[in-house]
Image 1 (spheres, rainbow over the protein chains, first blue to last red):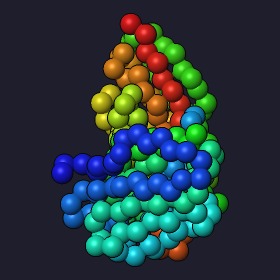
Image 2: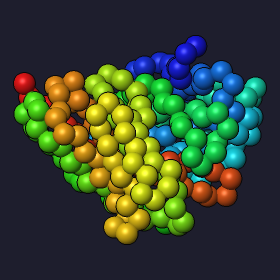
Image 3: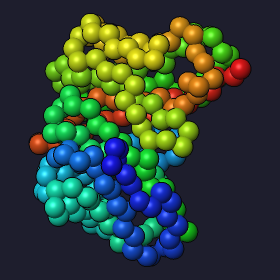
Length: 115
Length: 114
């Protein structure tokens, strides 16, 4: 597609359930990022992929969060045993090569609500 | 560590008013600086960027100058329009190992009234 696509756009889940959030980056972009945006805040970094490997997962808040990118394109963010504090908008971005000054293109996000 | 501090909102202006949104940064070296915009119901979009000191980024009538001496990258527009209503984020790339993630300010909500 022309831009970064994220599905679903909205997800409501019960506390304790497992969720998967999908990101389809711009074709040819090797770098992929996940961010989390809480209400009234700027996006906060979660994890960065270069190709298939997670080059930096230092932003993941705890071991309930995990992300994969098995073929170097689509990525899935997985959250186990969801908690109400996980409610936020999860943003995915991709860039051509992950260079420090390279523009990152963002998807519209998945709004996760844990009830 | 590297960070940005952004003027808090919300900001409400009348159409054709002058806009300034302040952003200051702390960084190692001289990274590029970015302004992103988030229109209602849309994803973050790059508005403008500057790659080195004294550079001026500009787009859609918005401007921001990379000021090394004041470590600032304030966003300005001479005459805002209703369509400029959005949330604006200042950002800079940080290096952590092999990562090149962005660190963002907290965002400034701008509402322009007709």
